[in-house]
Length: 311
Image 1 (cartoon, one colour):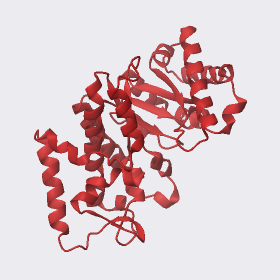
Image 2 (tube, one colour):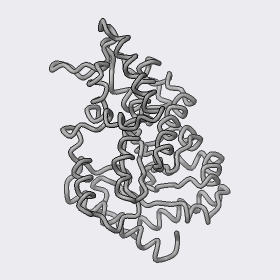
Image 3 (cartoon, one colour):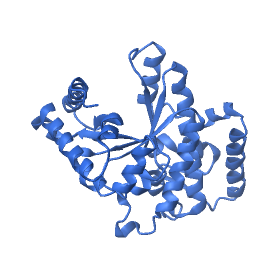
């Protein structure tokens, strides 16, 4: 995931790549201050309206072949029945914990490096929204934040909730200004209040494995639903467990989860109208037959729920 998102930082000279180690910020380089100044100057020029400069934050083709294959298909008129076009960007915690400085310290723990990462992701998200918006279909960009599952663990006690929410809001605000909807996906449990109290439009969670962890945040869920937030239920697992499941089993599980939330004072009409059915996580690393089964079952569950007017 790193190579997809560090390209602008490499081009500007803030991140160094060497054959014998992972990419890293080199704050010891003689022209470090100049490189930082150039980055913030570019950022401010884009904020002031020089939108053509967003192309500096384009995905490199070599590291994002799937994205460009998707765009090529859109350009040929593919997906004519689509109601939305979905893109994806990494989250600041996930990238910041993977990308180090020259001393192998995670960049996220340095305030300046963290700010550079957040602003880079925000601009890459805007560039992606700009590219996908060409096809006259509303765009949703999801922030993929598996790193947030580390929050609360003893090894990551210095992660701060308020900072994380603020960083996510920086990216979300950028997407809203670009005319896109903002979603977030976390494939495990976390402190969900960080997300529910942000400005995110859609929360995609692993409802197959981690529903209970989300159901603990009732006050935050009520507020999220009241402001028209959408829950994207990752009902369909993306592992071999899929072969032991049917649409009826998953629908039964969904209804049981709804009962839990309604008993905790969430409004059933909101839960049934502000909903998307999704796989629990991505399928990029699974076998083809597993991936096909995941999408077939996701479609079947969604269609059956619609036909029953559940949502």
